[in-house]
Length: 375
Image (cartoon, rainbow, N blue to C red; front, side):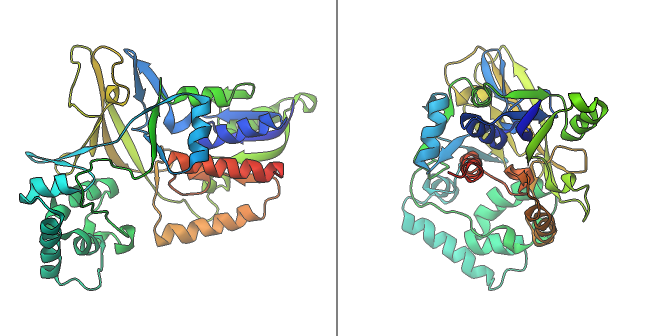
């Protein structure tokens, strides 16, 4: 079979691009190394609950076109992400807001909270932060840093905050309102029935082969008689860009995650909230997700997932690009190779070595599809 596009991966970027190309009359083939579609937004039903297998995904955007785009595919119900943070025996609201400050310092007004933070910052005398710890302290003061930033950040990165560069944290938002809405975007929600169906509907009419990596597909294809081989005009690669080029300049670095999921059929409400962060370094996981709270009223019992940050090694699942200076310079070398390609394109967080929220993934895929189609 001859295709206009071969697409490596079936995550959100790949699915949107494939859908747009097929809508323009192009023939598309997707190959996926996992045994399922939808990449990291994959959800599966457990006791009637949509379980986010690869971590919590909450859709939020300020892009009205993107919001309308996803709602035309499946209906979304409103969901406001209001996580809470556990530090020892203490419980705080996130993001850092007046509810947080009121609990921490017994203050009531924004002026009182600002005064406490300013006083703590002034006592530190940090003028030019030399590391992440000093940068964070210079932004939020001692208490917020020690209780809500330090341990969580060290777990995420796997090293002491004093060993991390200051530029990793450019800002830490402080909100002086009693508002627990984690995101500022006007459009926020969760798809009814989970995320997998979004990708299923996007890929309707496209040929998809799962359980088959791009490299394995190429090897299989080469073994077939020339007259039976699949051919294609262009390739969209959504895997790791350094892997595509055989790690020619070395491997880009990532942080990985490990998930520990527990099904609790006899318990209907484990923690009372969808997301609870654990900010102490001595608690090995960063957060606990209770999936049923993303879609209230579904299923009996409950399902929770503990999320453990992990070092990444080649062969592990890459989750978070480490966008520091060293990796930025290395990525630039691979991007230069990609820029010389005529019929190979790279998309998504692995192909472009950038952490994307879901709405930015969709926007980027739409833009690439329109550029390819000459719209």
